[in-house]
Structure formats: C-alpha cells, structure tokens
Length: 442
Figure 1 (cartoon, rainbow, N blue to C red):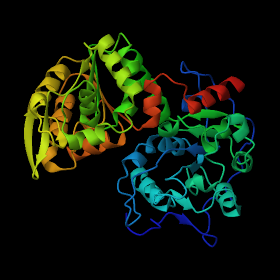
Figure 2 (figure 1 turned 30 degrees about the horizontal axis):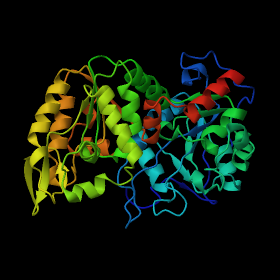
Figure 3 (figure 1 turned 60 degrees about the horizontal axis):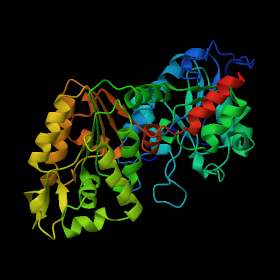
C-alpha cells in the first residue's frame, strides 16, 4: 500500500475541503419506517447533507515484524455501505478499531484509510485524533459526499468496558461525538457480539440504523441457521473441540440441520474422545481443555444425534516431512495429523453433492503447508461446484478460499467470527439489540 500515510492523513496545517461548506439542517432525522428485523436500515433515512457517524469493523491481520496489514479483504467488505452513504450526499466520519491495547497489532488506522481509498475509488482522509480539536474540526469541515476515518477507537480507555448502552452513552466518547452527528450507522457485524462504547453507546442518543453489511449478515445467517434449504450440511474444522462443542450441540437439536461434519483438529479430538487412536502428537493438541464434562457431553451428542454427525475416516500424517495417509484404525502411535485423507474427502464430497445448503467454518487441514492442503482444496472445490446455497465464515476459512481461488464462488461470505458463533447459538447480539432499542425509541 505504499508509504504509511497512504495519502489520506489529516494534519493541523492541511486545509480542509468543505470547511466553509453549506449549512445543513440540524432538524431531527425522522425515519420512514422499520423493517421486519426490528431495526432501521439505510432505506429508512434521507441522509443528503447529513452528518453520519459510521462504525465499521476493519480489524485486519498485521505482520508482526513490519506492523503492516497483511490482507485488506475485511476492509473491502465495508465499502458498500460507505459508498452508498457518500453517493447519497452524506458527510461521513468513520469509527473503527485495530487490535487491543498492549498487543503488537494495536496500530493506527492510516493504512486502513489507504485501503478504503483504494477500494472506494475516492479519498478517505485519515485523522489521527478521536475526540480532540483536530477531530472535531475535521468533522465540521466535511462537505456532502466526503468521508474521514478517525483514530483507532480503542485508544479511548473505556471503549471495551463491559457496560450497557445507557452506561456507554454517558462516556466522553459518546457525549463529545454525538453532538456532531445526525445519524449513527453500525455496519460492524464482526463485532456485534460486543457491548463496547462505540458499538452500542450512540444508539441511545442518536437515530441509528444498520449498514448494508450488518443488514445482510443478520438476514442471511438467520435464514441459514434457522430455515436452511434442505438437506443442509454444516462443516466445522480447524478449531479446538471445546470451542466447537456448544455450536455442535445447538445445531444437532435443530430439525432443519441434516448433516454436521467435524474435521480438522476438532474432528480428530472427537474421534479421540470416542476411543480412537489419533497419534500421541495429535492427542497432545486435541486433549487441551477437554475435561471429563466435555467428554461426557460429546458422547451424549453422539448417542442422541449420531446419525447427523460425520467424522474423518482416515488421516494424512507427517512422515519425515512427507504426506502419508492411514485409515483411522491404523494411525501410527506417535503420529501428527495434518490433514484428512482421500477416503474422508470422498465421504464429504458425497454429502455435499446431495445438499442444498452448505456452511463452512474452518479448514479441515493445515492448508498453509502445500503437502497438507489437499483436503482443504478438494473440500472447497466440492462446495463451490455444488448446486447448494453456500456460506463460508471465519478468518482461516476465508484465507483458504482466497488461496485456492474460490472465494468469489461462495454464495455468501460472512465477516463474523465470534459474532457468527453467537448467532449460530441463537444468543442475543448486543449491537443488534441496541439497534432495535434505538428503533423503539424513535
């Protein structure tokens, strides 16, 4: 992306285009209605000439050595809403976060602004300030169809405090910025499972709407998890079994879920719990955090819903740096499993071929290593060449889809991680509930 500034920074000496722009009406923004999801969307507001505070999630992978962004795909997903707001004449200030304080990836957002500028095809100015004089002056200087990206919102000390929307509305962040805006738009679906100041606080004091990404994520994923086209198949891999288990239990109880495939480390951990030999080196990883209570829950899941659960029938192990496949019953005692084998791939192909909905979260193997990428490559090809409605979610899954050139072939790509899991579990989403609360107040 070139130098750090990306040509999108704001400094004290730089003139602000639009600083003497036309006066805009500060009258109350009134929505035209509320949709079936219970919250407002961009369809409900006339944003021409209005000051809009847009919250997005562009938290991206960062190279630990160079501290530069590794991938801009998540940033690209936020462009649709921003482009619509600007095309409709809004004056947009963007709030976003990157990393957590103290972590190596807790960096400024100047490079993010450069990515936004590239994908949008028009300038997104970076302002290295949040609620100080520089930021407020930059907001006032916006003209119709212009946008700025403010400083990493997690520089605000109380951003991540566990508080209610009403409590966050009393924060300095919300009190200072809210007075500058007519509308708050939240498009940060990947963070919608969090009750942070910038995510829920503004819904108490400003008219609020979901952005296009938020709207589409909630609509599509609710349909996929609650009323999928059948037969439906849900595939999980690459994660710790203890993290996957609650989702597996919840999905297995739903009549509309026909197949649950568990591969990757989670799948082999499941096999180990059921008494299979998976190799000592794999067992060491798989058994982490697997308590007796977790083991009992897993066994009960198989007892109650075994017909829905599909596990690997073979494995590819590392044999002195080379790939070698074994049936589950024949895996060497000291093996380290890195991928599913050909028999498992065939099994998955047959299930996917008969499905009308396929959801994938997590690759089935260590796809970063070329010799162990076969399972992931073949699985992705099977899914994207099927006639099913296909959905992929999670950072590792999307990275794999990008690597094997099938990312664009999925029917829908979700930006969510923790938010996706929470929606699968049917749990309350703080940001969604805050948007619904804002709609009720209006």
